[in-house]
Amino acid sequence: MKISVTIITRDKNKILPQCLATARQVSDDVVIVTESEHKFVNFADQKNYAASLCKHDWILSLDDDEWLSRELMLEIAEIRNWNYGGFVIKRRNFIFGKEIEHTNWEPEADKHVWLYNKNAAEWVGDVHEEVIVNGKIWNLKNCKMHKNYTTVEQFMTKLNDYTSHEQRSVNPIYEFLRRYVWHKGFLDGWHGLFLSYLMMIYHVVVWVKRKSSLS
Image (cartoon, rainbow, N blue to C red):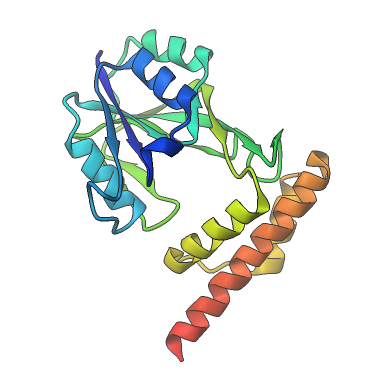
């Protein structure tokens, strides 16, 4: 089965070389969409637009800071049953120079439909967008890779952007405990503690922005 790959980015120069390299290994149709080519409304709209430009029905979605593991590329190539609306793929996250194995960034917690049939699915959500599939889905075993936040400054920049679109309000203390205790963030060392704290701040900012918009 032939697949297309979509990559959304603000700046083509920020696309990781391994992102493009692995995309081209699995597809003859790599579609890149920047904000200069399509006005940014939200992440779901941007990804749906990218999907509309693809020449194949099956689409693999990548962000500019992601790439495919060799194991995942082989697994996709070996799929024989395509009678699904989409496939769930796990993601390994590397944050501040370390792979995060807990803290709600572990592969089992960060898995979503990223390979889908555009005739049976669409992206929804302003931020933390998801693919809604009309049909059955199947879980793949292997992961794509995500070179997530590399600096605190980058995290805070995205925090300001994402919280302006965030619709979900969560108790900040609950968010800290959920990540640090329930998802065993303490096993990630200071990374787990710091990331749990930063995500608590994220939801404080969401609360403040929502309150200020109502006043």
